[in-house]
Length: 183
Image 1 (cartoon, one colour):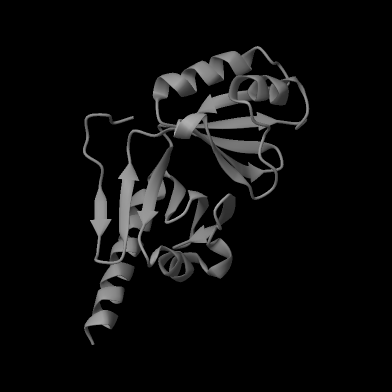
Image 2: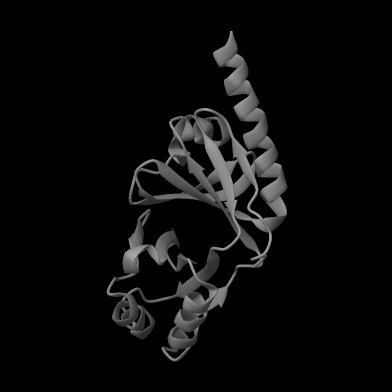
């Protein structure tokens, strides 16, 4: 993670998009949602693996677990140390594994009244998550996981290599919003 680098921010009067450089991202992979891996996670966090299309915030906002597929959950952590501890403890479970993806995935935080409209323009109405949901889709023709754990905020998880492309679409869409509002 680039902890010393300022977060990139794109903003208008009705929307803000900010790249969250300090959020650590990990993937939890498993075959059995009720096995030792899942039980170890439950013992550590007090929560089960999220079900299909679900996202939840844990530990007072320190962790977010988001369904990504039937055998994968994305884990977002406010601290790289917290993610590293989680990965280390889950390694002993044996029937799953956890990998730090912080170098490969980036998180974009969307806030503002037009967030849902932006997501619709980039990927379609089915891409917009309700609070407590995680939705995989294509936005700006790249794979994105959109998740929401609180009102007024959506997080987009995107491959680092595709981040500049997605942000370019966000910038252009905001310019389009502003042009439409000016006429």
